[in-house]
Length: 277
Image (cartoon, rainbow, N blue to C red; front, top):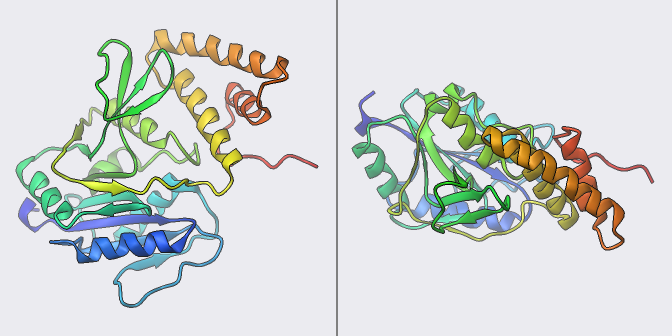
């Protein structure tokens, strides 16, 4: 397919307050050269109110499979929507707003860059000494990993198919870092452009702040131990167990952090298990 006649699809995962999703949909439909199709994957407890004034295709899976799982549901749905391998798919959070020129600039970037890549809008990296993720900061070349922030990213459909969609076994948080490592293993470059602008309202993807901390700690520990270059894996194998001992033996240690680290060292991923009363 010629780049100038590519279609642009958006997959939006809805969770939480529907007002945020309303605003995001409004920004998508009112921008210049808006996407050709919008897929909403509804993971909220209450069904998303379908507003006929805004054109979109709504899917409500039987269970919440997390952000990456929701994007994968949308990728599967696009087959029935007539997607081609060269069409551009944008995966985005429901709390991201686009500017009037966002999709105009996005179309321009893909028109001028004839490459298989994953395109992001925020330059992000992980400090391998501390395990902390940083956005829009200069990274040290010898001890960091670059990744594409998952709040808004785009790639040709066949690129998503090549890497078999987004990794969904984390369930929540750190999926974008894992996706970036997955792309690296498939020799798919990561690209970042400042010309495509979005505004992230930075709401939590978890209603429960304890769950948020659990997923951040567990998935971060698991990623650092399993997905970093070999010397760093050993470093984080030792560090994670030292952290677990610290939180298990000190009265000041947070139980949720102890639980998260304990699950990480046992290789447990997916939704947080409910503890018996």
